[in-house]
Length: 194
Ligand SMILES: *Cc1c(COP(=O)(O)O)cnc(C)c1O
Image (cartoon, rainbow, N blue to C red; front, top):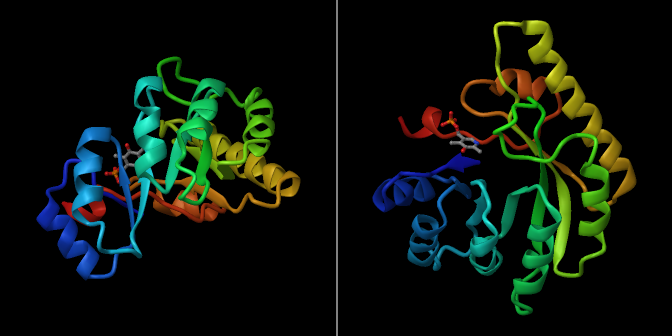
């Protein structure tokens, strides 16, 4: 998936014309302008990958195909409530805070199961898997451990829910490690656009 935050519409248009079909955006207002602009390209999928605020959740529900940063119950209820009935259920990933940095977004690994259960009971939301952003440190053992835990968590969730098929793991910095740990959706910004 191409992370197109901060990219201008003419650059995005070029990437659409060159075959990119999945786009990730972080900032809701900026994203909605782009989504409107490219509405005629029906094959494009838009992913919300930014920090999600409850007062913006309605806009995410109305405009995006996926929300990858679901990390609390309140957001689940709002997405379900505001997803327009004429659209397919919104696809969601549970964001797990694997690096355990207190300020990072994402739910603690000990709590994601409860959230998965709630999501799977909602008619207007489709649970597709897990999103994570490991912290890359000089301590290789610690870094690798984060990837392995996410991989294991993904396979567990996949066994529990038939709708689960996506592990969104990896940015321009850790493509290889992510793919080696069963990621099947990588979120690439600077390696595409810079
Ligand atoms: C910006 C961003 C990316 C892309 O990072 P790059 O280093 O530009 O590849 C991936 N995931 C999230 C959540 C982001 O905010």
